[in-house]
Image (cartoon, rainbow, N blue to C red):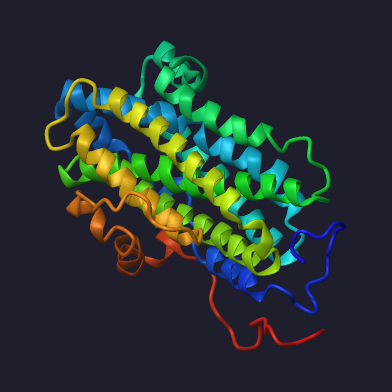
Length: 335
């Protein structure tokens, strides 16, 4: 089974073809930072962005500056270590590439958005020194550190700890923290601001959605192979984790919107975050908790919009490779 001890290096016979297909799908989504143009953003920051919006943007940049490095750290230390599926490890290899690409993107954003060197340093140190950003980092480290010393998942309690870590990063970090920040970006885009940031976020949004889908597919597999682990106690712990993540993200919201931003309020963000949290609970196989509705029309079709943009833009902007009948991998062959 997928958490069995040992190291399975054999792709034939293919035990988890769904993960291999997710790897193949992710390979089609290749982009580079050379394709992002921040020049108009610089003009907007200078001429069009209000002081209240500038504060929001600085907080976003401070969060983005190190967030994907934290995700990548956990991916290497914990996901890759324990999921005994060569197919999923292939997917994780592409995910690690994505995370490094996101790190580079946010490095460029810091360089373009923050000309003052002391402010740049503060942005990179925000996960240690800015309270609302530090809360997010501390949340990540709490669940990362909880399984750092687990070398072998040889008991049900250890497997539950791993599942909690997986849910933390897929459901709460990528699935809630990042989606909260994406909402701020698309709010600014809806006002005609920062097209470079919006373009990069379109592509990052698509990547993160695939990462979440990949992790959720692992959780579905774990439900099938270890159904006894998904008991009432685990559900209670996951709900507590979601509550904690929501409180952390709302603290960030209170900071980011502390000076007031026309068209967006803390109440609206709470509703949106609760709506997203319910989506994650459903994906995890648990019941919705908040029953909130999405208050942002500009986010309603966001899951579809990047896909639409993908086909409207030139091929080299977001896709590499092609399908060939001669080179296609089949899933029903033993060797």
